[in-house]
Length: 455
Image 1 (cartoon, rainbow, N blue to C red):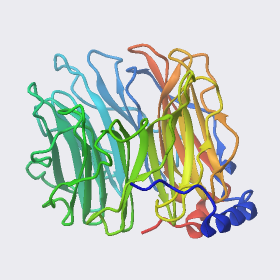
Image 2: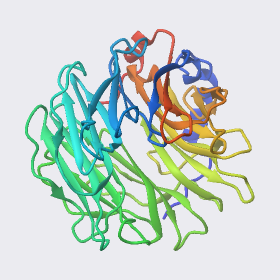
Image 3: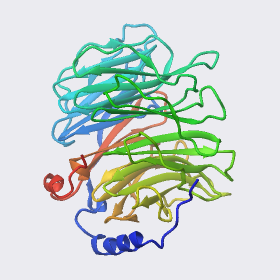
Image 4: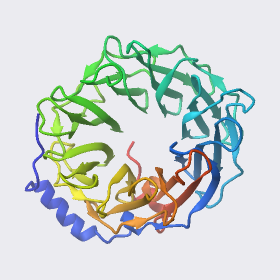
């Protein structure tokens, strides 16, 4: 396993010079200005993260609502970039069904198509082909005990991956695909003889990538990867990615062109503490390079996030010092495909714990959002990079409320010129608010001409 070198490279020196020149430029994410918060509902179920996604000028938000009997998935959309929202719609399950209890709702937009999935005594799915104006019927894809649902899509297909648990710890990793507006194929089990656990899913063109761990069936879980090169029709053999035989968890995927990055937390054998590890494939998942220890310290590191932007790779994670009240958010960057990383920068500033970091492309760099504080007193905070490196702008409090705020999700649009944040406010089982804020760079409509999305 390789440990990243801290500074001293020619690339790092050149990048530092560029950052000094571009740090205050108009493309810096810190130049994004947040609008006031909009309240989308006051009846959301507690501890279920509201989900936000975008496609061009559309913003889509889903959450689990408890206003009536049962717990149902509610949906709201904006067609003007988050300036205003259309009326709330209920997508299911039917309130008349005894014991209906939706959970784990997900939303994803791809062109004119909007996909919403959730779990309720099995996997449920609804889709729209008119940007969320209308939805087709609820499809009951399974009737089993499912968990860890993930959603991905391309212009031609939609994909779902999840784990299925069983009483004898012999559960599995399952996958289903369907053509846009078509009939779903048969469910496929992907883990073979390997364990099952949390799933991550990504798709680009005809390539589909599935990453999972074995935590559901083995306390000393490893990390596994499979890919398809024909749109999910067939999958190549399982690859094992874990580093030193410890317990692997908190895994994430990032895909940019032919580069595939897997990042995860590993604890136990061969490590002095819990570390954030990374492996890169430069050939679209055919094979992976050596394990790189990104955190590489004696602290407890966990919950990594990863974003690939042009030649730069950003990794953020929670890092807990001995004796600290809780973890803090830190950020590191690589300019050589993840082979080496800069020294990590502290993102959060308070002395209390930071929780649930999220990171998306923003401006010429990235923006992070996280919850900070203890239950009942949490706030949702954000911070963005300046220029092309990991210099940081000021911390902003998005919630500014006497209520408990957390369970935040974030998406970006217009090539990083806009970011969209949704979160829960309140700590009750029922009757919580879903709040939404967006931030925009000046001249956002021209931004994709200056900083286009990589193909």
